[in-house]
Amino acid sequence: MTYTDRCLTILAAGILLILLSAPIALISLWVVLDSEGGAFFVQSRIGMNGIPFRIYKFRTMYAYINDA
Image (cartoon, rainbow, N blue to C red; front, top):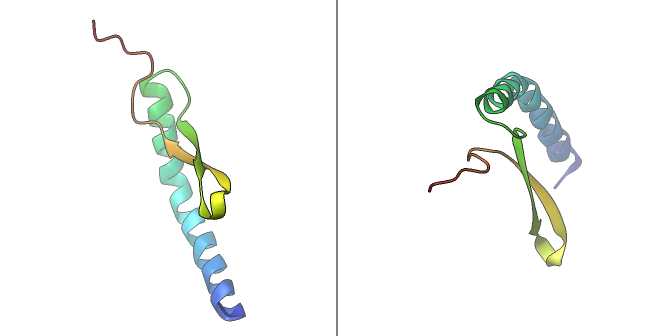
């Protein structure tokens, strides 16, 4: 990856972060208001060369649901 490619990638990521920050905030607020618990689900996964990393996802399932 050349220096120009790296700069364009960082610029595109910054622009997308700015554009998507409002929808991410609204979805987070919706999840928090709709159910108890946090808006994000954090999970550890194993990546390339066995290096663990954390992945953050919106929590889409209810916590502590009793089907009985």
